[in-house]
Image 1 (cartoon, rainbow, N blue to C red):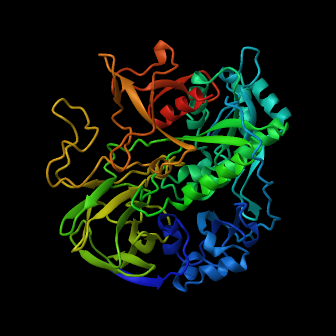
Image 2 (image 1 turned 60 degrees about the vertical axis):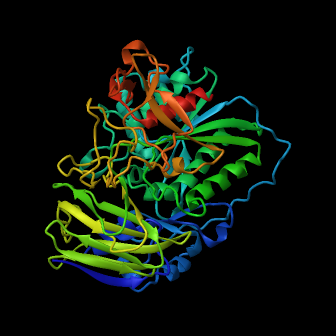
Image 3 (image 1 turned 30 degrees about the vertical axis):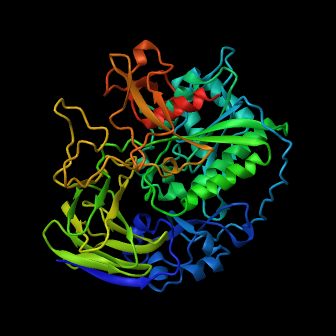
Amino acid sequence: MLSFHDISDLSHAPDNLLPAGLSALLAPPGAARSRVIYQQQAAGQTGALAVGSLPEPLPTLMEQDRLGAALTAMGADPAAGVVLAGEDAAATAGASFAPAVWPAACTDMVPPTTVEEIGIIDAGIAFWNPAFQDSHGASRFASFGGLTLKSGELLAGETLDPAVLTAMVARGHTSAGDRENRQQLAALLPSSVYAPVAYGRPLFPPNEMAHGTAMTELVLSTASDTARLHGLELPQDVVRDLSGGMMGGVLNGAVRALVDQVVACRSDGNPFRMVLLLAFGFLGGPQEGMAAPHQLVEQLNATLASYRNLGIEVQLVVPMGNHLQDQAHATLPADRKLGWRIQPDDHSLNTLEVIHPGPVAKIKLIAPDGSKVKLKRSRKALGILKHGGKAIGAVWHQEVGGGLLRTRISLNPSATRQSGLAAAPFGLWQIKLPKGPEAEVWILRDEMGFDANPATPSRRSWLEDGARPLRDPNGMPFLDDSAAPAGALVLRAGSGSLLAAHSAPQITSVGAQWQMAAGGMEQCWYSGNALDGTAPERWEDLAAGADPAHRPIGPFGRRAVLGNGGQRRYRAAGTSLAAALAAGSMA
């Protein structure tokens, strides 16, 4: 039997309360404290962020609606928002700092027309790979660092000493040097993917493909010989959260950290122009429909504008997303049921997001066994879902502006080894709107990303309507919804990247194409569209800049790319590859 129980009305909640906070909400007493990323009251308009632990367990603060008071006691600004960022074994006070002050705008400092610097924010960048050296044997990387995510400190970048970078590049051409470099990075950049994880298995083992290394090779394949590279490693906790909630919390700080890293490396004070590749796209939802751009886009625009005032022109390049066939978006009218398929043996959380007009949310949720519950929400409310008397999920309802409401439904994994956490039923869940205007439904990317333990796999969920055609008579996936029959609810429209969904002058979205035998270009079967079905701002052929033996062949082809410190190549495809090619060609 499925049932629903209110916890409280919320005046304040973390931006990614669901799904990031679900395990903490349902965890038994005595669980570790939740780590958060927040802006201190003294930070003003600088955007500086700190990392700390909540003074009390998250369930207590949510049930009693005391998060705002707790944040204020930590010196945080509750109005600026807060993001959950994993857990700490012991609570640690937040960082205390003097806020940075931006210099006055220098309107006479006009950056050159040529791009001199290329930044890469990614994970697993083996910058010592011999392929990343120029004709004189010098590294194309002028600087390298990582984003620190540690309680009691600022969210900031740690940059390798130039002598350390040079030494790592010098020994990186051997297997022994590759291992030593990884061990040294684990110590120097403890938040990065090179640091140990559960079961002692790194997220990117030396003999497997690492995303950041592939991105670097593709950037260099189309970049000029004079452009310099600068790398910034994302924290491994962010990499594993593919829902995008934690990425949204660190992204603005990561951009600032990398641009400041480039400024420190140049040390000449002259204006310059750079391209910044952010190839980790994510499902942020909703993509459109709000009266104003999402807060994250506004923050990024403000950051990029502040650098422009200093004579630093930064162009951010993002992938459109690989979600075109993922069945992750649907339009749901009243009195229709929409299926949500949860797989067995899934050790990841699963989250559904419903965007609908206000003032009251009325949703019927049906479990795979046929039991059902009505979710009638009219406030910023949080509640617990139970099945058979055991808590298996939560429902969070909030206003998101423009007269719209957002309801997130997060379920526990269908298989779990975590003590005190009940597994949610797998199978076909369903939702229904009894009456009112239609709603937009999204699945937040719910795999954990990179499984530290192969015995506990994370699997995706998807939407079903019983009508959506998957392939045409020739066996090819459809690229849009023009062939969808009447009654189809699941759509191919809708970008999987929140950044790519909004039009901003200094953010370029990139889609992937392949070359047909007849000579024309065709959209890749996975490359996403915007919500209205329009194309990304830029297309790239995945064969661009590749040797003949490394090029993808046909619509399902994959390009052979470098993936670690050695010369072994791995076949890969995706709009992140297209974004990397675009970033290189801009320099």
